[in-house]
Image (cartoon, rainbow, N blue to C red; front, side, top):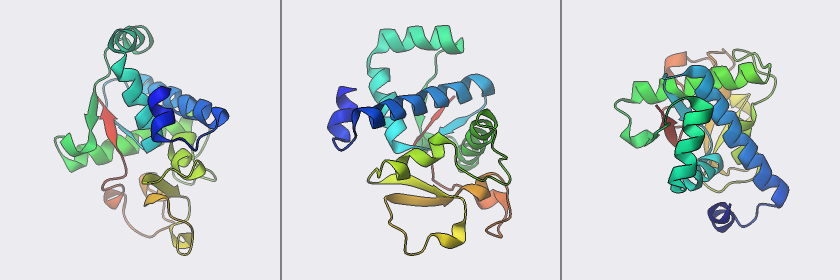
Length: 173
């Protein structure tokens, strides 16, 4: 947690624990999806993942025991295509919603992975909203994305294909 504390000194102990819970949720999503691409929808959780990766032996052992394979971290910018990155965020959205019993096409709340950056006021973080039309005038902590686009909902009136052009920081493959 030392790097997390350095990067985000405003986080309380309980908020740091919530970030770790978000990382567990991400690993749960990765386990559920197997080898399908999974994008990371949170900058603060991605930061915790980076720190974990630095402890290479522990990370390798965790991956083998918990996931049955080594989970590589691929920055979104290095993905082979934008379509793969978009599919990764859609995959993450679908499973994160399922785990929390949220209808991904008509969400009433955001899963932790999609809510945490805004909740913890992460500067430069990803901000997902349930209603795209209500983002004007709200405080902005980073890039904004409409969650209902990811879930192929109709609350913003555009197609699913336009969702998340860059609303992820890294992907597990």
